[in-house]
Image 1 (spheres, helix red, strand yellow):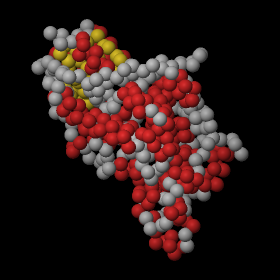
Image 2 (cartoon, helix red, strand yellow; image 1 turned 30 degrees about the vertical axis):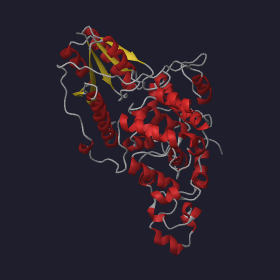
Image 3 (cartoon, one colour; image 1 turned 180 degrees about the horizontal axis):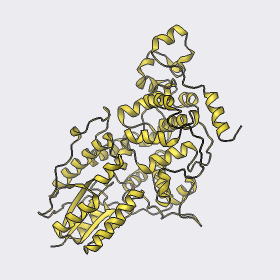
Image 4 (cartoon, one colour; image 1 turned 90 degrees about the vertical axis):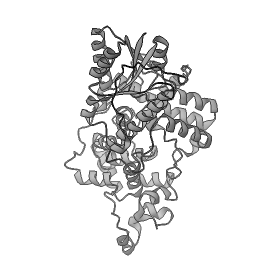
Amino acid sequence: MTVAVVLFTSDLRLHDHPPLHAALKAADEVVPLFVLDSGIHATGFDAPNRRAFLADCLNDLDASLRRRGGRLVVRRGPAVREVCAVAAECEATQVYMAAGVTAYAHRREEQLREALDERGVALRVHETVITAVAPGTVTPAGSDHFAVFTPYFRRWSQESMRTPFSAPRSVRVPDGARGEPLPERAGVSGTSPGLLRGGETSGRDRFSRWTRSGLSRYEDRHDDLAGDATSKLSPYLHFGALSPVELVHRARKEGGPGAEAFVRQVCWRDFHHQVLAARPEVSGRDYRTHHDQWRNEYDAADDIAAWRDGRTGYPIVDAAMRQLRHEGWMHNRARLLVASFLTKTLYVDWRIGARHFLDLLVDGDIVNNQLNWQWVAGTGTDTRPHRVLNPLLQAQRFDPDGAYVRRWVPELTDLDGRKVHEPWRLPAEQRERLDYPGPLIDLADGLARFKHARGRD
């Protein structure tokens, strides 16, 4: 009786799971294993919203395995130690897992391979599990990665993606596979009240419903802040509850401009993965343009606090920051807005904003969070690093009726139309009744400071 272990990491699903598919073909019995890794806990990355969503994902994965005769084995502790222990207990000869791109994932894989080799156990690592196209597959001449999105997208679009795998019909788990109780969402404190329900079942249901109702309009409406017309699939992609390969296949099958625009967003995710795979250090260091004039956390403490609390006096910015705190998620257009405001209008180091996002975002990951922040801050892959998003112009364009602001900034609910975006223009008596702060900084002053700091007077 042959046994294999499948180590689940950021791939918490049964549909289109290449490591599980390969293990089931190679072995008579399979141990589906997830390790609540103390190494990740030590980094502080397992913030409450992600910990709660992870609990949903693990419980859903366990339920899906049990319907197929199996179960999820959960262990706690250092990942390498626990994988090796499970392999030994079950006399497994192979361990299967998905490839990662972060420095932590690389170290884990190297240490795991070395430890398993000493025990005569083979490690099989699969690509295109977490991404649609594996990092390093598409490269320009003379470089190990694309630094600009558009040429990457052209090449990425020409790649022939593998056919998604169906979920297995049955999974046989050896009796000797010892596990611990699954974590529960109810046991996590400090979560956002509007946090989505996690798990493959919820993710597939959301994608199916959105495909029918929102995909065709995605190109025209994905920047509509009040319309809330995005898919909200990013948390499921982050945890691997959905397969990016399957999403691309299904979107392309639907066809149309909306599907093309959606696939482009999936490609953006792959783009950032291939950048970080080639340059792991940029999770904390500037990718391209280095700046040492950022206002630090001490000098800008009051401004940073106002930004975090949604009290900057710019309603569109404050609405977005309050959505983040309530839902553990933020509209993509809003992410660009608040990041530009912090890094370019307030001229605060992007790492401060990225850290706050990671504290709250349920989809917060090192790859997309850090590189998107760098893109906006002008230190990353943006070909126009000096662009500054004016929050008033953005509000007028993407929240013209003020519905998004009124949803998240209740102090301004009674203001009609575009008045909601500029409450400082109201008569003094009316402003005093609002209990809402004036602008933290004049936009012209912020722009002048930014240009001076970047040497663009």
